[in-house]
Length: 79
Image (cartoon, rainbow, N blue to C red):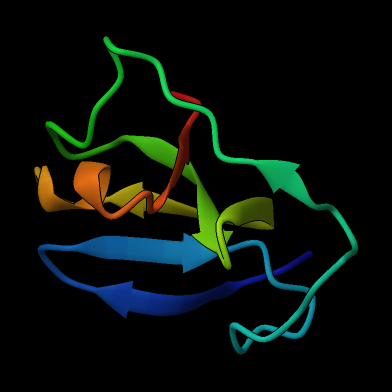
């Protein structure tokens, strides 16, 4: 029932926030996980968004390749 609160063409589409403004937190607090074959190498990557070195309920979908997000620990790629 949440919407997309951040849409940046050519970059990402972000959602999963219960407040629909990017500030919502549902209490999920997991470590960022990396897998060597999953990178921000193309549009359509589904990623658990990171904040303060952890991931929660918010996610984003890449709209283009952005390898700089790998180095920034921007989240856990799940698809």
